[in-house]
Length: 402
Image (tube, rainbow, N blue to C red; front, side, top):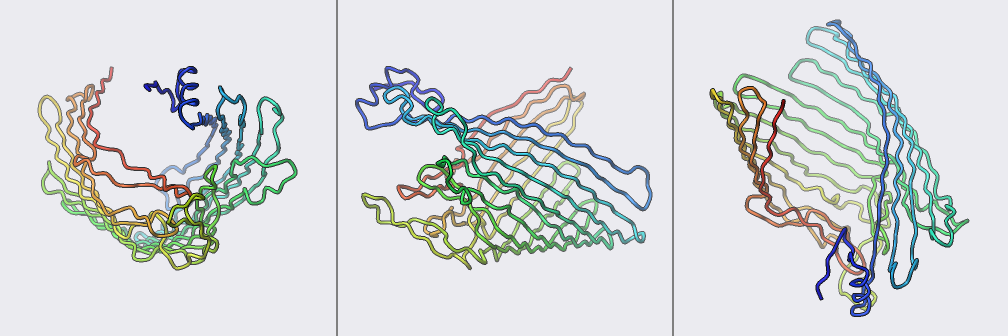
C-alpha cells in the first residue's frame, strides 16, 4: 500500500483508516509550539582609563506547549492532551577590569539570575479543557567570575556556571505530588589556567582546566516521554591546545585538540539502564549507582586540523578550506554497553567574493567520505533509539548585496 506522508503523519484520512484496518498501528501526533520574548540592556565604559566595565540587565519569557493526539480518526480523542511550561527569567550582571600595573590586570564579575517555571496540563482538550496546575518552581543563583592576568601570555580564571532547572511536562492527576517532575538547576565551578603566545607566523594557546558539577542533569525515557532528573555530582579535568601557523600570506594551518583523561560521575545513585535479552516485557531494567564511571557523550580525545587558502585577484578573492575532525569513542547510555565509535569527518568549502563584496558564491561538502556514526541515543526498555549523523551533504550558497 502506497501512502503519502505529511509532517510525520499519513496525510489522507482514508489512507489512515486503511492503515488502521490492515496493520496494528497508531496515528501518533505531537504538535509543538514555542513562543519567546527577550530583552537586554547593556552599559559599557568609554575611554582608555585603567578601569573598564560592562553591566546590564536581561529579561526572558517563554511559553512552550506540546500536545499528544492518538488515533484521532478511528478512536476520536483517545488521547488529546496538552502540556506546557511557562518560563520567566531575569538577570543582572556586571564585570570590571582594573589595570593594577602595565602588565597586571584583575577582572572581577558576576551575574545574578532568577528563573521561575510553571507547568500546566490539559488532560483532554474536548472533555476537560480546564488546565490542571502543574509543578511551580523557582531558582536563584549568583555566578561570580575572577581572572588574574599578569601579562598578555598568562592567565587564571575561576567562574561559576548555572543551568536552569527543568519542569517535565507530564500529565498528572489533580492533587498528585509533582515533586518528582522537577529537576533542580545544574551548577558548575570552573578553574582554568593557561597561556597565549602570538607572533606573525605562529600563535599558540594552551590551558588546563578542572570542572566540578553539582546536580548534573540527565535524561531518561519513561516509556511515554523523555524526563530530566539530577545525577548528583561529576568532575572533569583536561587540557586544551590551539595553534595556528601562517605558512604564507595566502595559506594557513590550524590545529586544535582536547584531552580529557578524567570525566566521571562522583555520585550518581539510581541510574537507570536496560540490558538484553529482549523478552515479551522488554529489556531488563536496572537501577544502581554508576559513581566512578565516565560521563556520557564525553570522549577522551577530540581534535581538528584545518587548512585555509585565500588568494586575491583583480576580480575578487578566492578561498578554500578543508577541515578534518576526529573524536574518540564515548558511552551513550548508563549501562555502558552502547558507545559512539571513534570517527573522523572531513568537510570542505570553496568560494569566491567579488572585489566590491557585492557578490559571493560558496560551494560546500560536509562529511565527504559519507561516514555513518551514532551521535545520540535514547535507551528504552523496548529498544535503543539511535540518532545518526547527517550523511554526505553537498550544496552551494549565493549572496548579492545592493
